[in-house]
Image (cartoon, rainbow, N blue to C red; front, side):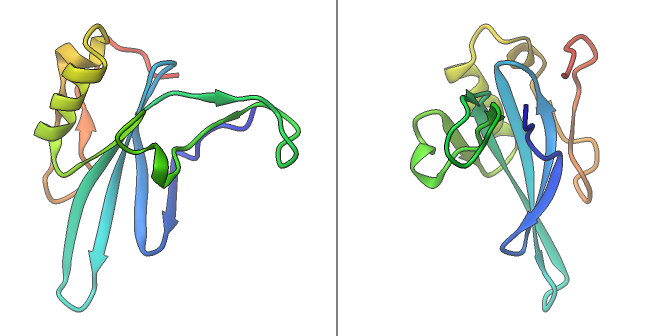
Length: 120
């Protein structure tokens, strides 16, 4: 199976996978503004989805949401509080909803406090 990348850069935005299991995926997006020396963060939360092989993939692959998926099975969040609201609304029984997303270092990579949730 072709898996999600844990880290990649696209159109000047750095994506870091900070959580993944068989139900839920969360990426932190870092936007760098060199002329101002500023980095901003936001998040993408989406349902874990595996797609069957097709004419472009000869094996199963983890499907990253397209732009049209947002609002249906993927959500863009401006901060940890927004992520936690999405978790409560769309993943009410998921263990991550009870733990929540917490920022351990607001000037760097945020991490999940998920000691009792196993990532795959």
